[in-house]
Length: 116
Image (cartoon, rainbow, N blue to C red; front, top):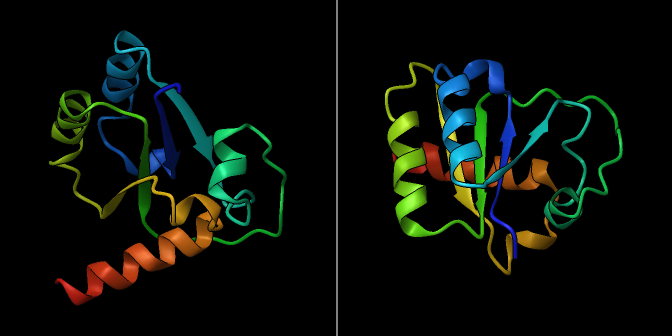
């Protein structure tokens, strides 16, 4: 399986260019999403079967890891740790693989609010 990183709202990620270069060096594919793609299922996004859907502006930046080794994930997370705006992170699991991206983000927001 290929290592992939799904990124929503890249403009809210301050080190995006540096992150992009790091992923290039580590052979990790970046899939960029915008507000017209949030109704797609995570599995369809990973398989590049992305359809434009109704516009749904989700607030935070989101980074979703798929098949990324722990050491690589640590390097990516270190690039994201000083982001001044909220950037939610998740790993693709057997459960969220079939969720829409929007459902995943709403779940992450709920967890974030609980742990604030």
